[in-house]
Image (cartoon, protein in one colour):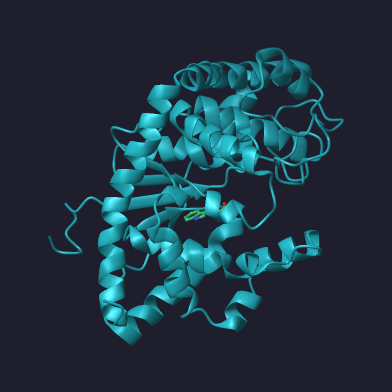
Length: 334
Ligand code: TRP
């Protein structure tokens, strides 16, 4: 089929690192959209455990975290019958392609990556080469599946740009091999901020326990965290410059209910922030409840989970190996 034929199903690919339970930010900003994209696209979603190797974790924890992340993806509605869901390290083509592409990755470009600069500032005791060549591995993830679109947050756009550059360089040096991927920025993608400090992004590793909603939090915890969310001294539920706390709660409410900001303002006219916080907490708890229940079910069904992990890896390897073989031929490796 012609590359530009509108009937060709476009390919979407994204990955998430298995470091800690996903937050409401990961869910509303990424995984919920990944679920919706399954209808229209051929989707590849994976647990980026090779990327997580760049920071030390205890091996047993690591194994557990990868399984948990895989189960969470399924629990969030990624359907292994529709999408290909897998764990990165189970497909050896990723590491191989990562090396091949690292040999086309200029030192200068890698040095300019803000994530590298941030992470090496954060872990000055462990600035390893993997942290440095991380973008080449990520480029391999994307190019192996000839992805058209990659839904990523703002913090990953530089890596995506890097991927396009390295793909173009490969194509130029060795002949046309890779499709150049584009970013996918969904209209509905919500950027969720910390509940305690609404000018900062909601983070898995926030030290303030009230700042972050984890996707496995129970109802009581969710309501409590929303009740203590930082807002301002106004009273009107309206989206306005400077009202970061309320804006964040409105973003969350809107992402879940699909209501516009104006509709939300109308709904809470004459009511105070307290009512609104309870309402946001309630819709979040309702949204997350089935995910939490499905997750618990999946973890008890070890045989099913193992089978899905193995099947995902096998199907992904089948596709990745084809691209890998093509790239190796072009480079004169086989
Ligand atoms: N680097 C991404 C992150 O930390 C995870 C990731 C790895 C990824 N490989 C990818 C995302 C390929 C998109 C495509 O969020």
